[in-house]
Length: 95
Image (tube, rainbow, N blue to C red; front, side):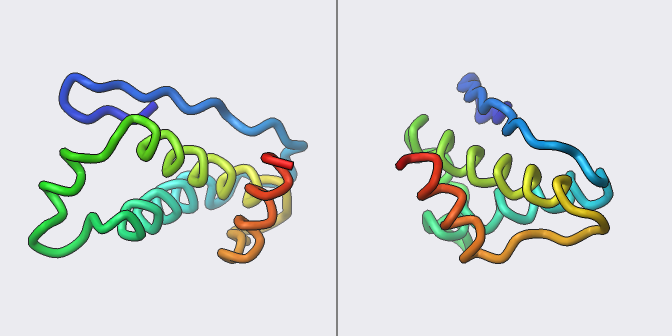
């Protein structure tokens, strides 16, 4: 769930077989920050950019973060996915 002011965006979890939960939260937050930075939410303009993001953009950022955490917990150790691995997961999900 992502919350911005009164807006609440729900992002479903990604079902996987869990091998190890170490690093799941850190991976989620890192991937979320990376996705938001990719949308321009960095530097002095960050607050305005975040306020202007659509629900669809927030959902997409949250989904990428959830996918990253799912990949991390599906393998042993704190082993987060690379951006290329996340792109492949997203492509597989959309067909």
